[in-house]
Image 1: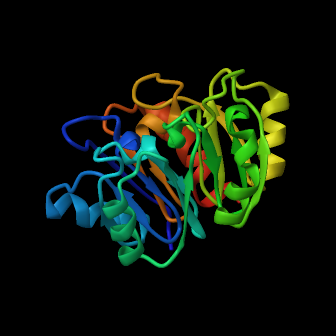
Image 2: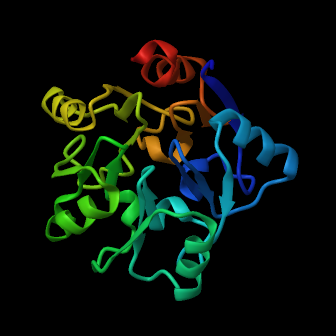
Image 3: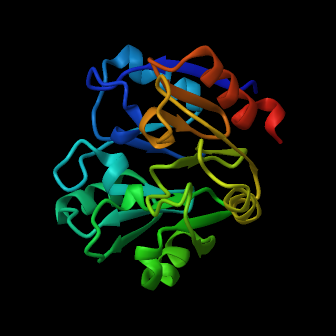
Length: 225
């Protein structure tokens, strides 16, 4: 199956990564687009779409993250939202009771490994148990918001343009994928904001440039393995 691309907006906003997360098993969105767009996102990623708010917010990408094995949620998630997620799909659900609630901005993961912000250090074991993956702490471009500064799939990882060689090496060994630097959405170094990606395809901010699309294809596409 060929690697697919789609450029779009969600909620009339090019920052599509703030509204969801994608894995090889599911895509969870906090907004439900028109059926035509939803169907195209599902086709591009080759997985079913699910819709739910987290912490009564559409910004699922900020308050949640996960891989094919599990999903990590902010402590401010509502009980009814957790119950809905349990009905939607059968995976591990972990709630991180940290004072830092923007969990999606603090965790970078795929099915092989997970890089977490140093501020989540004491939750390392619970995150590893939920995601079924090796967990390490670290930074990207010297930033602790590792979930904002990069996006990973089981094929590749695209990081903040100021990420160091040492940081890239740690991520590459931990996640076991090709890792490189880049931008999205007309020059933003905060990769998460403009990208939903898995092994099958990438949904990209409509504002992304040709060179940005080329780098995404190189890191995540068919030739990335």
